[in-house]
Length: 561
Image (cartoon, rainbow, N blue to C red; front, side):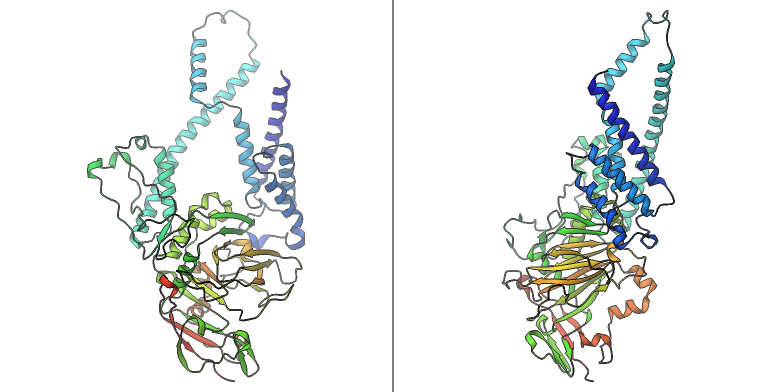
């Protein structure tokens, strides 16, 4: 036995031991699962050692270190910290480690067709040999190997049967989804259909014959473009987005090439390509995405202001007066027609998702879904279950104000758009505006001294779910930007948070609050909200992305004390 083979045996032993430990840990029913946030007992300062252990595993998960002694030690440390916390996993890191161990144990087996053919030829030759029949044989090791062959043979037969069964179930589930999407005219789940085409289609030998079928090759979600050449680095978009309306039929049901019906194009009202999004996993329940072009940001802002949307806005109430930008009085009277500039220092409103046209928001969501397979497992699962019900826009004009060091703009607040404390449904937050950057900070509770600080630039996004939506957050920093005009127009607000939300649980559990969200009442001087919001408004006409023409808004002035 060579020194190299001894080292490999030792490494495999460590890998096998780690694999067994991690597998038993993940299968332990007593441990808290990732979605059971309300059951966690390890939070705040107690969670620091767990976070450190997960950070070390991530740091050593590169191809250079993965599988090495330091990585094994880091995974074991994370497993022990999770066991101490009574939790099953941390952002899927243990599951990834289990898959890596399994891959490494199988890496020494040559699975090539040439190797398999050689093994079969050698076995067939040995079946015809006569020289071994008269020799004395020691059967112990041979019996062990024979038992292993029998077990693997049974596993192989079961795996083949299961694979065929799962393939059929997969195709049936996809077909049900396709029919429903075709019925409602929805395009948000095209990523799942495309993934099914790539997964099931590549297993079909007929795909190798171009005379049967050539699958479409969409590379990125596309929406339209009124602004040409707004970003030189972005390749020009096609005149329209062509999305297949039906999933690929089985090979036997496909028509011959000459009779193939053309795909039905799905046209968007404007054209702009959404490139593949980059992402960074910040923490469990928090993923950064980026970055959107200025033209797409303006298109999203315009879509958020749909006719009929009703919201609240205002300045800063100071005694009998209301201050607006640069300490000027903001006291509109009666009902007036204004544009974005007449909405005071801040405001917000919600637009039902079904009223949003098939444009920027839907194409953005399709781009997010396209990177879902690469996201953390918990985020991927939440994204698969995500059914957007509305867009919410909350805008801010600083108007000469600043944020003091170690301070915040409006204090720390929790996410109130949840059905209950355990509602961890996903939401997508897009940073818009003319600011250079905005500091978004998160804490477990208002009493915590330490915070997670994220410096966001316009066009960058956050995916928040589960633990990420249980934090309190605040705007703790802001760097003004240069207001520059472009073909897509000038951003009217210093910054704005555009949220794509799934409020089905919120609507079911809090119907009255949901109704007020869509049709907010005018604040009165007796309301605590009156300090910031004194007016109501209704969007009357939509704006035009070309040139950044703003929408028209009917503003209803404040009531006096």
